[in-house]
Length: 386
Image (cartoon, rainbow, N blue to C red; front, side, top):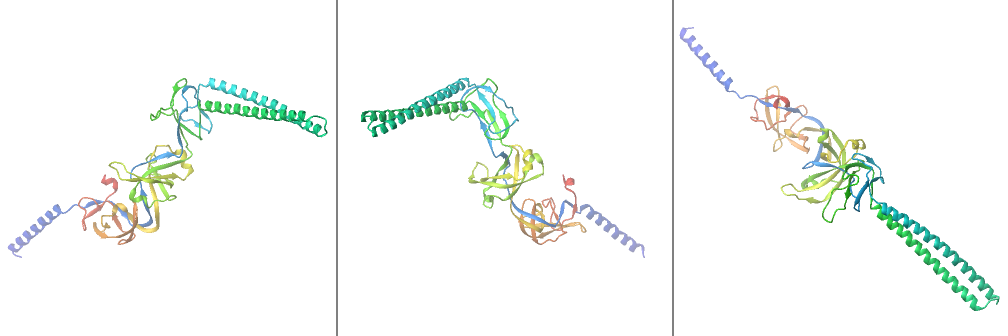
């Protein structure tokens, strides 16, 4: 080979190397992607709340005595467990107690008087019967017989009047007992004392009309809880009482609690600058969960409208608008955009009826910068993307 030909070949080689270096430097960097395997599983069609719901006790009573006065007894503290009928608070009521004792004594006296009057009436009745017998034998005059009859009717009327007077006295006892009850606050159900407002010897007054005052005792029934959550009006039509649901609470992380729909609101709530919603109540169905709950926890609900078993599914976050996904080819290090057909879906998984097969890997961050059909890509973990 001549020196000129060798120099030509050398020049060509240098040009190729330079071109290869320029291409290498300017080649696109692989897009980091997270992927998930296409697999079979359960896909549920669900409805979720639009804003955080609230754990609410089925029964909660904010109690105050119906009368005003000075607190004389306060045998409870916040956090105490109380039974139905247990005394929570009592106002000073010595005067009413004394009045009740007086009313009871007067009632007893009236009842005793009525018994005495009725005994006399019974005697007068028997005497009238004897005079009637003697009159029939013509042993007494008609005047004596009539006088005995009149006496018997008079004594019977006195007996009836005495019994009525005794019943009035008994009713008076009931009135005083009602007045006494107004000074005592008792638990309407078993529960936990959430809050106590007031101290011994302090004065409490009933709320004036239209001016609410803090309750003396806030009592919560811990035997039953539900979540009150707002559902978008668009989704509310598919919700029915009795449908199963999952409940999650910020206080318990990702743990899910079993529940079911117990009530659906009768009207749409329209709040300014917020979507129109319907209030839905979801109760906890597992009794073992209740001791761990506190009224006021924030909660989210997923109401299960239907369930598809053993279907091909992908993470819902992998879907692009128009039912498209990026499929990652680990051998070539590239992604390919593919059209798919979908079925049931929720925020977590979407059923795929056509376009994918088990074992395919779909990209779960399809909005990554630079991602396009045929783009080079490399698989990374979610932690590496952070």
